[in-house]
Image (cartoon, rainbow, N blue to C red; front, side, top):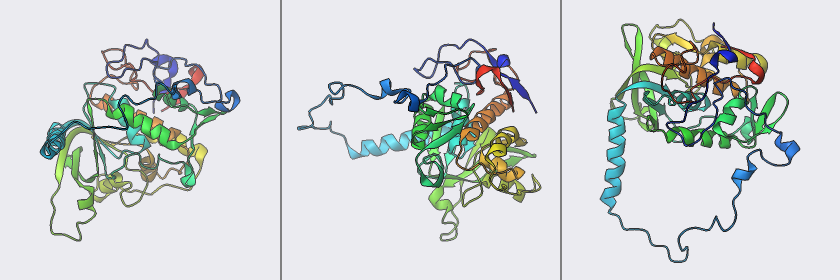
Length: 360
């Protein structure tokens, strides 16, 4: 178990290569200005950027007489098909496949893709990525994030109401939509949504990719004749399938089925305070070639569930990313190699204010 002091990760941020945002990363261990509580200030911390004048909001076209440029229907079909097929060809043999685009999977892919040399494919069975991070608990709107994970929100630019030991985002969808917009704009990332990971590629005891199919096909194997899958080879697979359910914990359950692990005991009852620390601490390469992150960690280790708090999902995803970077031989925050090469300046692990030690 590695212990990471924030001082060991400090370095001068370089100019961003992929994003237009120039800011310090949550993982450099650099001191970031504390947020003033939105409740105390009476407004959102980023409210100045959220409002524009009425004149600036006026559309740049006449709403009373709009005419779209002409297009042939076949062009629309060709554009969609050509681009998707190109993505499939590109990622048929890729660097990292992330299974599951919930809060942990998205955080992992975001952290990974800061290294522009790493190709990242995200496989998500739902049409709408985000998992359970579109809402807080019991279908309520607010998302609670315990510190120090608020530093990741600062990096993303997500506003929140700050309390002593936690922060509250007014709607969980604000986090999910923000991280997706930042992530999916990067040229080394492709999200394959409505695609299920039906199985794993395993060669000589090492996971070497995933077996894929359209999610609707996967759900109807019992109603149709044989519908064979496709494959994606990868150097590393990150399984972020969440807790048990129809498509939950499928990565570790498959490892048990094929005898690569002994058991999947399932998560224990809720205990927020011990659960989040355990999820991050136990995020690891579970078998050669496959890293487990997020709530799937609780399934394989019998850790408690944490309920509607999301900080561990974010930092577990980030830790999984750096484990994958280490496996790829790329600079990462786990072995102190960040800064030894030209990499995206945000590629750092989230740390608490004041140089606290984060047990990882």
